[in-house]
Length: 183
Image (cartoon, rainbow, N blue to C red; front, side):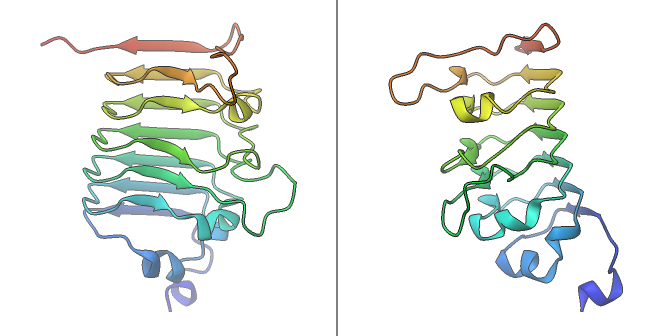
């Protein structure tokens, strides 16, 4: 039904609505390039693992003021090949005012490739503890801007895995802005 009416839509904007598995099943995620979600209060996971293969063309994700959101991308190894292709087209990720967000990527990240990610903006994410796993950090050749604002619980940019020490990516192009608002 939805695909018949909008067969070439590449942008999805949802404001103040509920999301569930049926919402995404009716969409043609494999065509989406941009997803913009605002004030979707009851959403816990934006992209469940069963849809991870459908996100190949996704270039931009903006999530703002979703009070219950705990994870953006749920990942799974089920049905995966060894190719690192998940999210390889993602260029920009903006996450703002998500008070319950604990994970940007939850689950195994070894098949995720952020080779196109240029800009990551994190604002007012009070429960986020880390941004990248070691394997994700190794797939960031184009990351140019990393903005971290009012993320009080953030402990690591790159989380330790298997006894490895925390690593900060060395790139003269990365600009990290870490501010706390003082009113």
